[in-house]
Length: 316
Figure 1 (cartoon, rainbow, N blue to C red):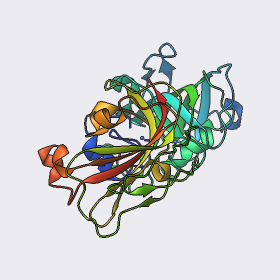
Figure 2: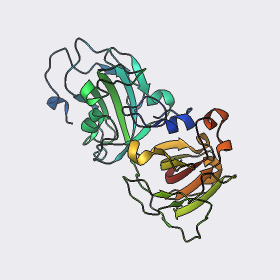
Figure 3: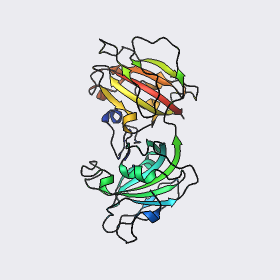
């Protein structure tokens, strides 16, 4: 459903993070009920039972699915309204109209974070969740045109599928770092990364000329220094990051372009645990990871080591 590492997502991300964080499944969408269509039995949102903040039980759809987006606020929260561009943290359950589950953050034990209202997730989510209040539980029936359309999301979502979601809106997460450029000499063995901070655009990474091979050892450099909570080797961080191969500088991943900030345990990506330990929230850290740091199976997929630019938005 979401563009997130692992799991099923409404707009799947490029495969790089899925390969590196295969064990991490996060992940991957307007109104009140009165504005969502007629009251005929066919096409109405299926019945939902269960306590808010717990995984819901959702019935199968009855009759033919609706042709348009159906949105139903099952419980209205008292928090702030979700705005276009917010990084929304939410628990969600997703199933097909026939009742077959294809994704659930509750099963993975942690909510997902995604940017809403900017095309980073499927249209149904963008249209349904902007304007809803934090603390709300929202049910959506998403037609193919506002979901995955004719292509589907094999193997879990067939083509032309109507999707049913129940989403608990938890909180708004930071979407950019707030640190200051570090006053340090640049390590010439590392690429140069811009210190400019933008919420919707990755920093520019300039690879060193004539160097197609990553340094033989793990290297890191803090180029924007934050003053928030420190990262430990057991931390999960909310992050925006970009990744490139050393050889040829080929782009491997870019969360800014794909799903927005993601929560990732630092132990899940090679080199991150060691390189980010002791760094503070609000920082931007450049990390060069040699090819041999990756598991054997992943090494076959990379022609060289990898450089990351990692923005640490928050730490838990």
